[in-house]
Length: 469
Image 1 (cartoon, one colour):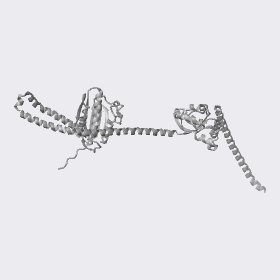
Image 2 (cartoon, one colour; image 1 turned 135 degrees about the horizontal axis):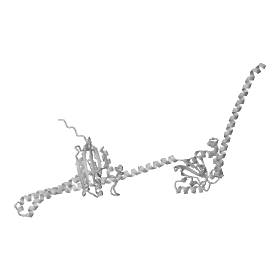
Image 3 (cartoon, one colour; image 1 turned 45 degrees about the horizontal axis):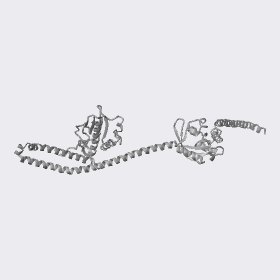
Image 4 (cartoon, one colour; image 1 turned 90 degrees about the horizontal axis):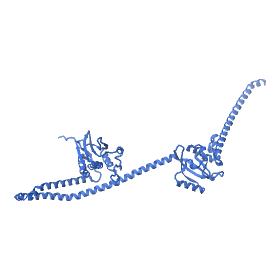
């Protein structure tokens, strides 16, 4: 037995040491948590003391106690009941019946950028939180006066001047507690959603504006198409009597030639008859020239007013320029001179003669109007040259030129530099569209010596290879 006791003695001493060490460790852990709890309680007391110095609201102090305790003791707020969950998930603000702020949670403080001391005791309208309109503010007051819940959007202007949007419910405090009277605000931050909605609304307004412009352009295009049909009809109606007049003039010339040959010696004795016989050939030729000019105008007008989309075919651009000059003759009178330098040897492109004539007509009319607006005589110069497989046509004038600020938007629909009522802003936009459909480009610039220059670049049609014999 003694031997057994001797063997067990070391084990008993070893177990005692382990027990003592474990007890000391447990005591240290308990002391640590007690000290931590003590420090946390001091922190809670300090925060509550600070808050109590700002307001005497019982309910506000209760909310502050829940918030401070959860922070200090690192407790899950959901375990502290519904008020704690509300404080954790929403921007929360309470006011007394006069609108003085009695509590603001950390989330609201973080959003506003104002310290708690600056918010509590201030009137709600001075906190940066406001309704979107005076009507909404009136509705909020009336709803709360009837002890009902208000729901809507509030805007919070932060300390740095930015804005946050809150989807907010406002309850009378009587719905939540009997401790105080006033209101409690529960707000959810919807700033990102509000910003996205604003962006979408702006895009919708922009698209509506573009759609309205497109509709206006369609209306104007339909009017121009109707005008083209009417012009073609008028040209056809003129063509019929023109044929009669032309035939009668030719027949009249034959009659006068016969009379002149039979007059013989009588014509030499009668001075008046001699003058008539000598003058009538020139008069008839001038009349024929005038009829030919009318016929050319009618042919150009028929070509220009041709309705519908024309299939592309080989077109002589120089011929299109001649057509445009004929149609623009009325605008090119007075102090406007036209000079042409059509030096291009390859002027055939694949396209529509009617559409290209319309482009040149627009450019010529714009240039003539610019010269007249300048108040001094001027000149329009039309040049054509070849560059590799391209045809380049420059239409330049000696007018006042184009303001640099107008150049970037010159080909945009409805953009015009003319006075109100003098231009639709469609001419250059339509010309740009036509040139693009011809796989070309149109640009505008100011000449160094003054005036503006519009350049058209069109791909030329390669000449057909000679047929082998």
